[in-house]
Length: 149
Image 1 (cartoon, rainbow, N blue to C red):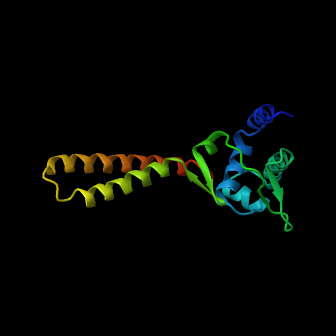
Image 2 (image 1 turned 180 degrees about the vertical axis):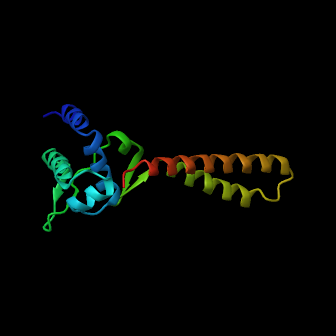
Image 3 (image 1 turned 90 degrees about the vertical axis):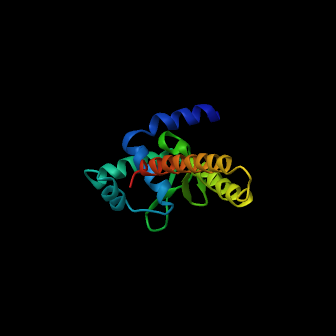
């Protein structure tokens, strides 16, 4: 199946409970049991969780380890997962990169230009960078909170 058609099929299959289960496992970065998934997501029964886990396994997105626990076999960017990148086995919001970038720039500007002859300009630059860093950090926090579990 061509890559585009496969991605479209995954996107159609990954919605609602299946997407929540997949995002939980991707965010956890570790294998989880059916009952643990059911409890963390507040699903009505383990059989409902198992149904969606089998669907995700059939799509090739999940696999089972030797203890029968499920883990992410292949990471796809669908739904909320489009706002994240994988850093090792953890998911990190893309916005966090900008928050860190502006924070580092803020510290650099404060140290490099502290003895400037234009304190008003330095103040404006530092306030602007601080606002940028805080707004990106807030957005990263909001995206992180949208992950299930």
